[in-house]
Image (cartoon, rainbow, N blue to C red; front, side, top):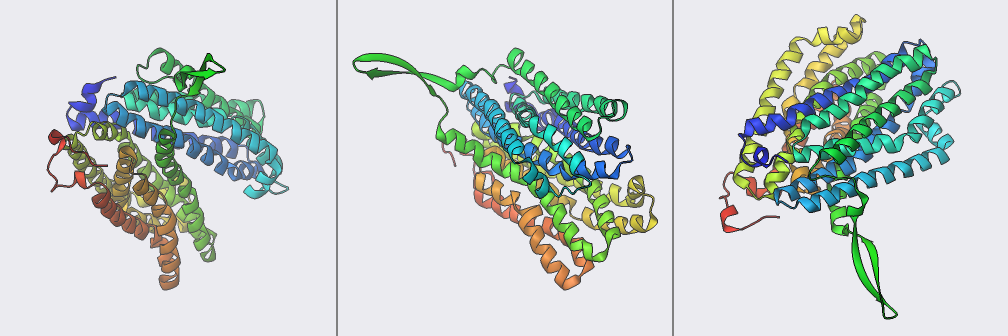
Length: 473
C-alpha cells in the first residue's frame, strides 16, 4: 500500500491518480450497459428488445446491492487505513466479500422461486414473456457473480489500486462485447445469449479480482478464517476451543449506514427517470423520447462527475481517519473547485453541440428540436450536480451516514418529485422540463447546509486541532 500517495503526495497528483481510473471505469460501465441493448436491437425483434428492457431494473438492483458492501466497506476500511489499522481493514474486506456472495445467493433463490410474480411485476406481457423470462432467469442465476463484482472494484481503491480496479471492469466489458454478437447472432440464442454474455463477463471480472486479492494485495483478503476468532470455553470442567465470528455489530452497522444510501442513490436514478416520463406522457411520446435522449447525454456528464468525486473517496476517508484535517481541507477545496470548473466547461461545450448530440441518437427533426431545448435546460444545473456529488462522496467517506442518506433520496427522489408536482401545476410543460434542474439547485443548497452542519471541522474558521489531539465525530 502506497501510504505516501495518501499522506504526502501533492493533492492534484493524488486526486487524479485515484480518480482518473474510476472515471474511465464509469465510462466503461456506460458502454457495458448499452451493449446488450445494441446487439439485441439488431435482431429486429421488437418483442425481444422490449423483454430485455423490462428486466433492466433487476440488474440495477444487483448493482445497488453490490454497492452496499463495496462503497460501504470501502468507506470504513479507508478510514481504518488512515489510522494504520490494517489488520482490521483486511478482516472487514473478507466480510464484505462473503456478505456480497451470500446476498447474491439469497437474491438468486428469491428470484427463482418468485419468477412468475417478478416478471408480472416488471410488466412482461404475453408477447414479451418468453424473452423476458429467458433474460431474467439467467441474470438471476448469475446474481452472486454480478453482486460480488461490485465489492473488490471499490475495495481495491482503498489501497491505491485504482488502475487495477479499472482493469477488472474493462476486462468484463471486453468479454461482454465479444460474446454478445457471438451468442445472439451466430449461435442464435437471443435474449438468453445476451444474459449469458453478461454473466460470463462478470465471472471473468470476479476471477481477476480474486486473483489480485490473493496474489497481490497486502491489506485486503478473501481468506474466510480472518472472519473468525478463537475463544476458549469451559464446559463441564473441560476447556474447549470454539470459533466465533470476529465481526462486530457496530462494524456491520457502519457498512450499512454508508452502503445503503449509496445503493439508494443508484436506485433513485431509475425512479427519477420514471417520474419524469410519467409527467411528460400527457404531452406526447415525442416529448418522452426527446427527454430520454437528453437525459442520456446528461448521464454521460454525471458519470464523469461521479468518477472524479468517488475516485477521491479513499483519499478523503484515509485522511479523515488519520485526523489530518489540514490536508483534508485542501482535498475538499480542490475537489469542489475542479469539479465546478469542469462542470462549467461541460455546460458550455454540450450546449454548443446540443443538436449534434441529439442527431447522434435520432434523425427525427421534431425530436431533435425538442431534445436540444430540453438538453440546454438540464445542463444549466451541472455545477449543482457537481456540488452534490462531491458532498455525497465526502459524507460517505467520513462516515456521516445521515447526510449521505438525506442526499441519496433528494436529487432524483424527494426534490424531483416536489419540483415535478409544483412545476407541472404552475407552469405546465415548461415546469416539467425544468423540474430536474430546479431539483439539482435545491439539492445543492441542501448539500452546502448539511456540509456546514455535519462537518464543522472542515470549515474555514476552524483551527487545525489535530496537534492538540482533539477529534470530532
